[in-house]
Length: 335
Image 1 (cartoon, rainbow, N blue to C red):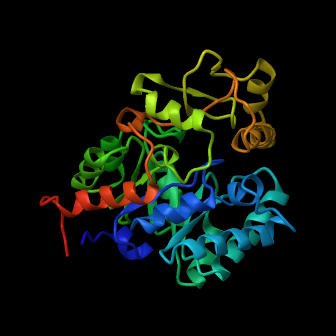
Image 2 (image 1 turned 180 degrees about the vertical axis):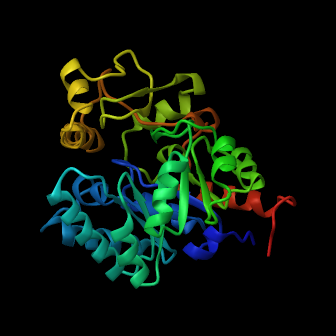
Image 3 (image 1 turned 30 degrees about the vertical axis):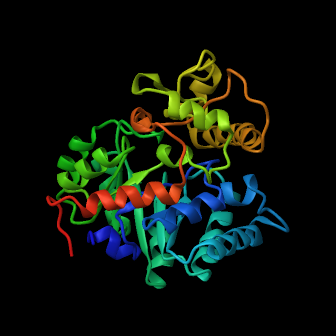
C-alpha cells in the first residue's frame, strides 16, 4: 500500500482527495468516491441547500446528509469549511456545521478563503486534522501560524478558484514548510497523479474528474461539456464570486463583472460585495443543479484536467483505478 502523511492523517488507502465542489458535491458522489479508497469532502452548502437536505433547517439537514453518506459507505469522509469574512450569520452557521461534522465523527477538514485558527482549535480538540487551501507562500505561512496540519496547493491548472503558479513552482516554493503538501489542479488521470507524487507531494486533490461521474447529479450537459472540452477550452471569470474561477468557455462567457461591481471589489466593501455576487451565483447554480434548462450564459466550472477526462464512469471505479496505478509505481515508497 502507498503510505504518505495524507493517508495517515485521513486514515485512507490512497492519497487522493475528491475535493468539495459547489454545487456538484451531492451525498451519493461523496460516498462513492470515498468508497473507492481515497477521501471525498462534504460541501455543506451543496449538501443542505442544493440537494435536498435543508429541512427542518440547515443544521439538521447537514446531519441528515452525513448520515445518508454513512449509510452508503463506512470509509472516511471529510468536511469543507469555507471561512471567508463578510457575513457574521454565515460564519455562525459554518461554526455550527463544523460542530455537527465533529459530532458525527468526521475528523478531516479542509478550510479555504479565511483565517483557520478557530477551526484548528475545534478540530484539534477532537483529535482531527485541518488542511488549508493556499495559492502562494504568504497564505501558506499564515495557515501554518494558525496551526493547520497540511496545505492544499492550488495551482494554475485548477478548477474553482485559480492559483498563479504551476504544480512544480508551488512544490519548490513550499516544500520546506514541514507539513504535507497536496497538489490541487490539473490532475485528471493516472499520469498526472503519479507525476505529482513522484515530485514529492503527499497526495492530490481532484474535482473536475469527479463531476463527470455516474453518481454526480449535476446536469448531463455539464458532464458532456467536461468530456468534450480540451485544455484550450478552459478560461476564467470573476462573475461567480468576484475572483477568478476557471470555467469552460462558451459563447456567453464573460470574464469580468460590470464597472460598478469591479469598483466595489477594490473598495473597503469588497468582502460584502463578494458575498452578494456569490449569493446571486448560488441561486443560479442551484437552479441548474436542480434541473433548470441551461443557456449559453451558464458557467460550468472546470480545470485544465478536462484534457484527460474522456468518459463518464463511477466515482468508485475511478478512485480505485487511480489508487491502483500508484501501487504499481515502483518509484514510490510503499508499505
